[in-house]
Amino acid sequence: MTAAQAIVECMKREQITKAFCVPGESYLPVLDALYEESTIDVVSTRHEGGAAFMAEGYAKASLKPGVVLATRGVGAANLSIGVHTAYQDSTPMVVFLGQVHSKFRGREGFQEVDLEQFFQPISKWAVEVKDAERMPEIVQRAFRIAKSGRPGPVIVSLPEDVLVEEKEMMFGTPSIIPRPTPSIEEMRQVEKLLAQAKAPLIIAGGGVKWAEAEELLVSFSERYTIPVMAAFRRHDVFPNDHPLYAGHLGLGTNADILNIVKEADVILALGTRLSEVTTQDYQLITTDKRLVHIDIDYDTIGKTYAPEIGIVSHMYEALQSLNKLEVKPSWMEWAGKCHLPYKGILERSREESDFMKQVIQTLVEHIPRDAILTNDAGNFAGWLHSFYPFTEKHTYVGPTSGAMGYGMPAALGVKLAQPEKTVLSLSGDGGFMMTVQELETAVRQSIPIIALVFNNNMYGTIRMHQEIHYPERVVGTDLGRVDFAQLARSVGAKGYSVQTIPEFEMALIDALKNNKPTVIEIQIEKEQISVSSTITEIRNRKKK
Image (cartoon, rainbow, N blue to C red; front, side, top):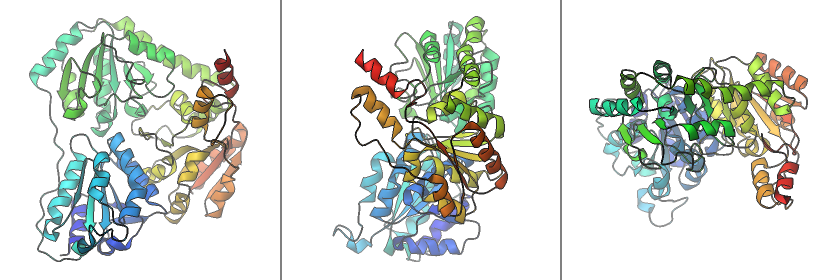
């Protein structure tokens, strides 16, 4: 078979059923091979960045690698934002990129970029296939690397002359993810440390989600009465209505929730890289705390904090072992109070007249508990993160990379992975416009997601920082008026524009019934710039 056909055979063996792309002449042989494969659906998008975000969202929702295809340097550059997001979010992705003819390399051929060098800093592996007969070996290795250890993106560069070569191809077995287990001695060390604890706390991250170990985490937390906090944008790793849930470590986290971490004496970091945001600029975990860091990736342990105990393990295996510890909790009073700050925040939000809080409360009242939410970058997400209780696993998909333009295309990928679920995206007007063209993809592919667009006619997050550091010196952050409802209707989607909670409620109820791609534009004021501050309040603080 040809090298292009071998790629499709590898995808089939890995049980890939969706491939996202913008078509390009440099990899036409792969598209032609996909034409012959009925088990793989090719989702053609309007922009490579949108394709990459769709694949990343699809991977998170399906728990298997997302696949993206694009052409040479220009297409590759466009989708690089999705590759970076997959890298920071630990999302498995395999990216196939057409490349110029081998004879043209080094001559600055048409759209030539050294793709291995270009993607090396933001991928687990970047490789160019120079020999057609090695295509199965390299592509199967790409899937293995993308899925194993800390998952992430792999780039495969495909010179156009190699794709059409016919060779006798040899295929290996589909990759199986290694599942390292903690040693008996390591568990004894954890047992000994916990026996000395007075205020232990779990910080749980994406590793728990990828291992499908949420139930084991609940069991471990309950067995030893240890409170749990979710790492940045991993809200659904632990049920938010559980009496041992202590909150989310993200942007603008409430001070009372942060105080719980400050009071903890032992921290169990499970499947989290303890990122800048999770640790509040690497300031939250101080040297007086005893840290147990468990992660499947050797390089992650000690990367930001030196742990007292560092364990390399698949999180399902780790939590099975942790559930067998012989430790008697002596911190019941501590554990009992850790849920109170989060619970109080939710209760107060239901009683307040803040428009954005009421929007979130309306979502809580009307969408199914197992609905999946995605969000874009922007201050609007602060209300979602603070006031929406994620009570079911696999109900949240968000970019820890903070990429703008992520929310709506990621929701399309999520819906394709979980077609029976209600899927909503939340975006600001700035981020939504960056990938708005994928609304046409949603209509063409009949992907019925609900996109909420919070429109305040500005880049709100940057305006907030502008006001903090340079008050009243506004430059570059004001945006023009866009009628998002009309824009949605122009491509065949449903479109609503609302200004009040009753209007939003009616639009949401209709959207949940109509089973069509829907945009609900929510017009909001510039003044309420964040969950905690208005523009006037920020300016007044600076004057003092």
